[in-house]
Amino acid sequence: MKAPVPAIAALREDAIMAIAALARQRPGCIRLELGEPDFPTPEHIRRAAMAALSEPIRYGPAAGLPSLRAAIAAKVARINHYIIMPEQVVVATGGTGAIFAALRTITESGDEVLLPDPAWSLYPNILACLGVRPIFYPLHGERDWLPDPAEIARLITPHTRVLLINTPANPSGTVFPRELIMELLDICRRYDLYLVSDEAYDELVYDGEHVSPAALADGDARVISCYSLSKTYAMTGWRIGYAVAAPALAAGIERVVQSYCTNVSVIVQRAAEAALTGPQDCVATMRAAYRGRRDLVLELLQHYAVPACKPRGTFYLLVDISRAQLPADHFALALLEQRNIAVAPGTAFGKVATYYVRISLASSAADLQAGVTGLGELLMAFAHQSQ
Image (cartoon, rainbow, N blue to C red; front, top):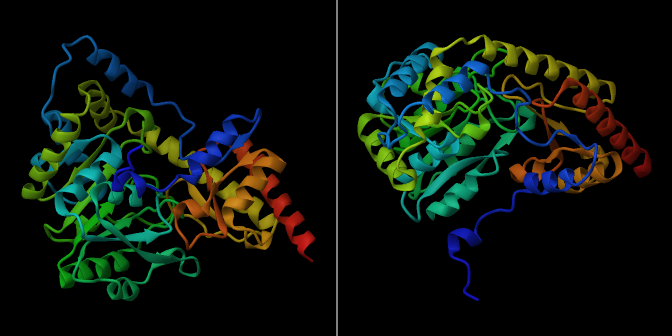
């Protein structure tokens, strides 16, 4: 048997998918582990896809349909508060595809990319496929899961090419304040780094404001912004997102997208255009539901004296399970086996969250009520055993 190629050998096993696979085998399991909205894709978006089926379905431009790129430029101005030309937009296969294409454009094998810890579990896998080395900078629970810019600066070497940030952040729900983003932009200017900003949850903010780095960058070509329609419009399975960059970088990103998929499905692009240009009350409805679920979960955790930072965005919440005196992957398995409740172990997101689990607020209020109650009761049982 041939040895696996290095990129595949370096891929991390996804602990969340492992828990999900076990949960699927358990009847009646309460599923709080996946970031999958429980809302259907809004009807006007689905109708647009069906209408597209009545037209000839052919290849489209690699960077996306001109009408969709124009709709995205209008959305960026309205929501993210900076002005771009449609030519700066490249449509990709979800936010994942946008991040992959952006990093492929600006890195080479042997480069280093600064990644947050804890963070979305697929970032290191993307870098492994590119032959790029991850350097992790910590996010601090005692600082509301925000990074320390001085710590980031100390990690920079001659091989560092990119600082990647995620705000609003998965798994913590943290939203970076304006002042912090200004400091991070300054670091990128001083050390000539690209800033790749993952803003997949840019419209799911409950307290304060989401600030896009590009809105503060004064046209700095170092900034590449990556977005997704998956969470805002409950379109996870549709697989559509986009990158926004300076014209020369956008041309490079377009070539990468063309190379790996030719173009995103025209049917899906028509649906995305309807999402961006159609009624937006669906976004407000889902956001309000997630906010209500967040408050419910925080109240339940407080009842069991379980520490958790209040998330200001996304639909995730990190829960401190250190009282159990078990690493998160062990606790998540115990919770599944003893209470039939699935949560995402913090170990899936890096080393810093070893004693945390992530709860998804994209589950129903009833499931959250039962699941968080079961989690609290199991934590109390573990704490009692250790006394």
